[in-house]
Length: 301
Image (cartoon, rainbow, N blue to C red):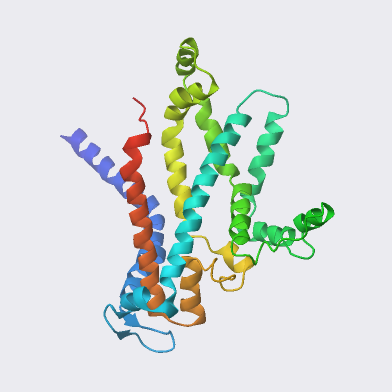
């Protein structure tokens, strides 16, 4: 009996210690994440400009968000989805191909891996400043090279199409983390699967199609989801490379729109509604990805 009581007290003591260690994380989530989310949900149904008290207006913010041309929600949603979709695919393809190359045995492989990884640890603000200098119309390094080649300068940051190319180049330059994860996944591919394909007379493409990709597809799926979500939340690159979404609002991404309405125009209610609209879009896209997972992601079995 005493042994059972002692065991029970020890379990209670361990539970208390666990809750105590978890308390900072739980409190941080409630205060800095859950609390602001609930407040923004309330503000989305109000007219709130910080300078005055919130005034309840129901779903009017959501109606204005979807119907008012001045809100630019539809335009912002289109350019954000366009950028995020293309960028996620480009990053995944580039990461897999680069990982396949860096997974081979050759002299200097470690140095090349470090070179590919280092840009990913540079803060995004510093990265954007560097690329802003490189892509500058007059004195940018790339345009200087193009002028030496007789091609002429390109307006990378003010052309509606080239601005997206610039953002894609910056994204690929900083995807070293994904490359490292893909290399780790490639090293876990069972050698027996590759040998089985080779015995059947398969070439390099067959090895990748029937042995390598099925083994790394769960990692590719996870990285694709994370890259897509991060791409949907692009912000710093836009505000540092362009002026309020220029040219022609092609970089007026959803986070930029929310910041513009909340802190420049002081339309906190509308910005809160747009934030929840953005949240629902991310949930919907993630749900679609998980719905298609069974068609191309192979489980461990």
